[in-house]
Image 1 (cartoon, rainbow over the protein chains, first blue to last red):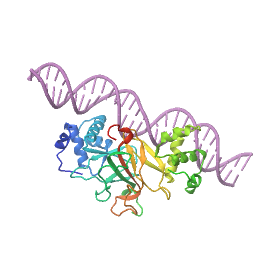
Image 2 (image 1 turned 120 degrees about the vertical axis):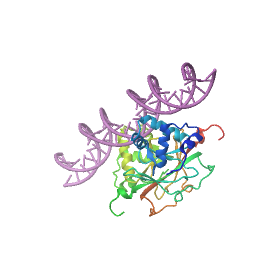
Image 3 (image 1 turned 135 degrees about the vertical axis):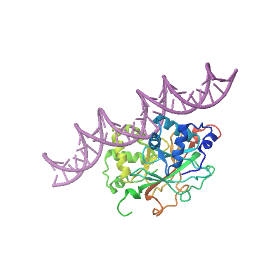
Length: 145
Length: 145
DNA sequence: GAAAAAATGCAAATGAGTTGCATAAAAGGC
DNA sequence: GCCTTTTATGCAACTCATTTGCATTTTTTC
């Protein structure tokens, strides 16, 4: 998603110390074309360092708590993580392929909620929202693209 | 959500035999004010019959497959089930309270996607979509309603 | 009413995520 | 610089919604 973000500053701006591992996690998420599962992040990290699975979960949790990373739910029972929307990356919807599990970011223009201060009619105070389109991606359906 | 649906016909219309258990599941979902977890359905069933948890899962799976019931993901790691949108019940968004886990249906007018045939720009064929607002419901925040 | 098909039950497995506690690394004080 | 305190990481074991395999009903079909 991003290339030229200063991840150190991003993290420390929200009071998260930028350790090597954390920086690596954030860089992986930042360079990923689509939101990743914790497992995928873990596998990517293992490629060039030794790290524990639990640590990855804890780092992701911190980043989400700090608002730097977004935790997105899917049709399967796992979560995906991606850079949170910010000035450079507007909020956007996702497409989820129920066959291969790939989650794709959709252009922000396409599906955006008319949003702002929580409407008084709502049952609570809204902190974030998700729009997810579920279906089958082109790669997963051979016939009649 | 619904009161006067003919659940037998609804099920058999999509080729699902209407057994006692299945009918009971569908009735429970139909009368529920908000989507329920499998566990909640199970507990409701246990009140007046003997049924196995696995059976509940399998029934829900069939109903989802038949398109009669919708399976909705949440901020936690479980799914909620509710009557699928149909002629009487238009598609609608949900509000999810991250504290108590309550999931509320929002009026269909409020958040609807400009939707129709899958746009050619999308990475796949869309079968359904979810809009979920996450936050904290009024009951869960004492101060400043 | 018997054979075949479908539904249900039971026990055990799965797998993403979490917790508790021990160890290592970084931050502060002097 | 050392020592104390805090924070981050590692390891093992646990949780809990959901799934799977297989045995046992129950329903359908002939």
